[in-house]
Length: 405
Ligand SMILES: CC(C)(COP(=O)(O)OP(=O)(O)OC[C@H]1O[C@@H](n2cnc3c(N)ncnc32)[C@H](O)[C@@H]1OP(=O)(O)O)[C@@H](O)C(=O)NCCC(=O)NCCS
Image (cartoon, rainbow, N blue to C red; front, side, top):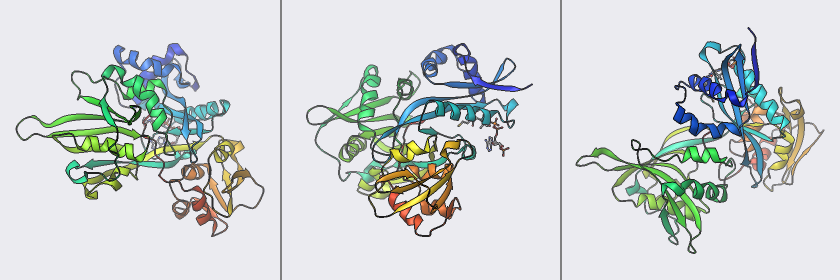
């Protein structure tokens, strides 16, 4: 029987959720869990694959904005909930779902498409490149404190669980967009990220930093637990889920607050930027041990023209002509001259020729053109163009998102 990929009707959301859950090796959601999830389905365009009356695959996207170099926020399809039942894999269903999402993003005039991949071998074929990595870290508070650069001005307040979403949702948007790759968060994402702790789960806290006039300018979301129950010799262990400050000094003050909590002898952090500021601020840098590094942002340019013109480039002399090929979105097959003043379409001979997945990897200014060229992903007509492209594109601090979706 032919498998049909089409928009999911609202009355089919739960059936599609069941298929997606099974694809991700989870049980179908309970009634209680489904009630919590439902709002997140209602504003996210959803596509599903049907074998007769059986839903065999699903993919959807939320519409968010991504901060790009220079600070503009560009419309982005945030792809999520992609899965195909094990009974129907490797027959083109996943490709059909991705095509539907890319077409839908184009029809909505979105500029970028972004996702977090379960496996790093899936999405390159659909024009995605890794535009940013993240790392995990274990931190010994006794070694890293006191931090250089933390502000001592201001105060802290631990939020009551009932106020967390209302306080944090606008605070995140106000303070977090300090790196390329940060995304706006639809409300259902915020409620998912800050779901209250249950009787059985570890206590979770949100502490807010207030400036000298009492205005919130950053927060940290963390868990605490005993290393060995409350037995003799047990100490506190903490997990940092996220931490954002309006300035470097506030960001470090929030870390300093965590490191000063009595009893806690070890912190673990996930999803940290590869150039995590706290590591550079540590009294003893070896107190911050990077434990993992992984691809974070898989990015695709849906409208390459809007994307390349939507970011800024470093003010250096010279320019490069880059030719892009995109087998899926025909309008992206073009050349741009990129210089310190911006990007514009060009008919000049290309200095560099790349696939859409490679310009996507370079787009936020993280991975260097030199490294991309080293892997053979860039056709180089002019040897000086790689250094020129790096000088134009590089963005520091590195790109980072910090939101899993
Ligand atoms: C990833 C997934 C959606 C792909 O669906 P699918 O219907 O099997 O994909 P397709 O049949 O369209 O495959 C297209 C191509 O991708 C390849 N591919 C698909 N899944 C792959 C994987 N996990 N690893 C490596 N290659 C993969 C196929 O071999 C095929 O290659 P080809 O074009 O060279 O023949 C499916 O395997 C799945 O549901 N996996 C578990 C859940 C999951 O990881 N979801 C993604 C969340 S980010």
